[in-house]
Structures are given as C-alpha cells and as structure tokens.
Image (cartoon, rainbow, N blue to C red):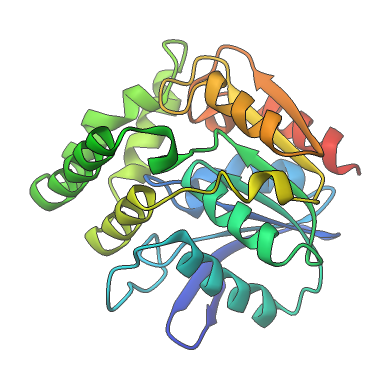
Length: 262
C-alpha cells in the first residue's frame, strides 16, 4: 500500500484502478480497509483512493490532537496536491463527510462531484449538554477500553439487524485498530462541529446517501443535509445501518456509479 509524505504527516492510502480520481474519507471507527469492496468494484471506472486519516490505520499520529475538521481538511488538501490532482470526485462517510464538506466549501474548483454518506451534524444536531456528554463518553471509551473492547461494544449499533456475521466480524476487526490520537482528535472535532451555515452555499453537485436503518445518523439527518444543500440528491440504501457501504456494497456502489457516471 502506498504512502505519501506531507509536511507533518505520513499518509497511507489504498489505490486501485484508472480514470478520474475518486477519493474516499472514512469514519470515526474505520480506516481505508473498510472500503475494500468499493476499491475492487469501482476501480473499473475510476482511480479509487481510500486514505487513512491522521491517527488512523498506517498513517502517522498527530503530535497534538486536532480539534476541528478544518484541520483534517487542510491535511487532505496537502494530500491531494501531493498526488497532483487538480480535480476529483470526493466521497466522505460519517465524520469523513464533515471533512469532505469543509473541503468542498473551500475548494469548489477541485471537487467535481461530492458524495456524503450517513453524514453527521455533530454538535449542531445536539443540545450543549448532550454534546458535552457524547464527547466525554467518546474520550472515556478510548482512554479506558482496549480497542477490541470498544469495537465489541460499538459495532452492532453501527449495523442493521440484518448484517451478516461476516460483516460484523470485519467491522469489529477494523474498529479494533483505532488509536487514541486519531479517535480523540475526531471526538473533539465532532464536539466542535457546526457546518449548517456552509451547506446552503455549496455549489458542487452532491449525493447524500444513508442507510435506511441507520441509528447513528438516521435518515432524518440525511434529509436535513439534502434540504440544506441546493444541488443535492438523496438516496436511501434499504435494510442497512450506519455502515451501509459495508452491509450492501453492491447497492451502494450502484448509487455511486449512477451519480458520478462511468
């Protein structure tokens, strides 16, 4: 798997295929490994790249915890520049959608089309008390639980009751790789997240995807993004939870191809 050296980080990524670049940004409990069924299928049409965010997978850890997704987006901009791409398709899942939205807002000339899957409003969707409570719960979890225990506790909530044992085990395997520097950085960034004011200003064609049975960022949340982003379309993946792209990669990939074009 290739790596790229940035000014402050070594970023690891998976890459498959040829064609216009489609770069994928993973969520809080995942890394590039969770996108293997997108890499293997979508490579027929695009150059598919899935990064490990700073503090995740085989990428290096931040020296100081990041506190805002704009910081992740700054690192991602350097990543895109180092790869030499002037325009990309961009897909972000969950917290990855927050990075993608920040990036698309600031660099609309680089993002040809945007996909946000199971997007999160973070603090903007919670009361101050609930936001504080969730941040503390996330920090306590990563500070006091072994990553495999954290995965065991969290994964089933990310999936629908229909998820196969194979999908459950793979999601647990990947989430058990989380490390405190990355997990804490994303936790703080979620606690500081409010992108509601930028959504109506987005000019990039946008696809919003959500698992029908998502309990983490439910369809009602996806509808808020769809209603707030002017040039957007909403697609629901039936019978899937928050990790809809892992539960039903065939349908997920079909929605991506239909939106981006071959």
